[in-house]
Amino acid sequence: MSVIEIKNVKKSFEGNVVLSDVSFEVKKGEVVCLIGASGSGKSTLLRCINLLEDIDEGQIIVLGKDIEKLRNINEYRKKVGMVFQQFNLFNNMNVLDNCMLAQIKVLKKSKEEARQEAIRQLEKVGLAEFIHAYPSTLSGGQKQRVAIARALCMDPEILLFDEPTSALDPEMVGEVLNVIKELAEEDMTMIIVTHEMKFAQDVSDKVIFMDDGIILEEGMPSEIFIHPKNERTRQFLARIIS
Image 1 (cartoon, rainbow, N blue to C red):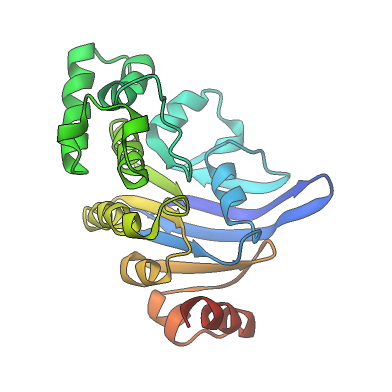
Image 2: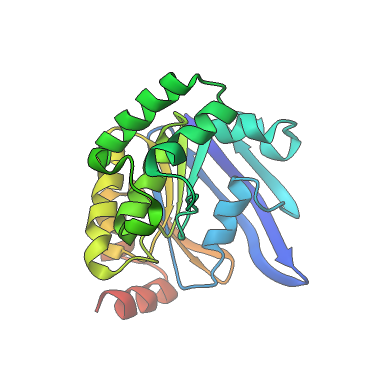
């Protein structure tokens, strides 16, 4: 069963076409990695799915509903979490409060309920000992793991990751990717924009290669990475992986 259906989506900014007739589906429990050069439309597509951008044409159907027709965006974002490149943590709040805030404001949980869930998710990402720390004292990898824990606290059905390791030092990348791998093993439905090709190869059920706002190729990791059909895909992978 498909939980996300992207149908002929088009998006432009001031006449510049960013997404051109993009269509694909994501099944429940599936991990889909979007790869491609910077500026190919991957992050814009993710922002459209999370209603941070409006589409010009087409349809995005998530959990059976056309998201452009939704009246309550907060209800939608309870089910569809997003993890950004730049963490987006509140620097004036400690780790625990960062993970509690949306639970209290959006899910209307009591402080104690929110606290217990926050601790549970922070334990899951290996940060239980940092619950009283402030973001400014954390490494980039730790900040991103807090951001993942915060998203998980909302008990989402789908998680979107927009280049979750792009702002990290190389030695921090592995700790974040390991958390995402564990989520994949738990059958969390995810769309991940990433430049980490080995990770995409290991974790994804489906890989989509985008170029200049168009899906040029999609398939299983073995198809895309070992036997790419499109010459542009071959060029991209040769440059990235070599």
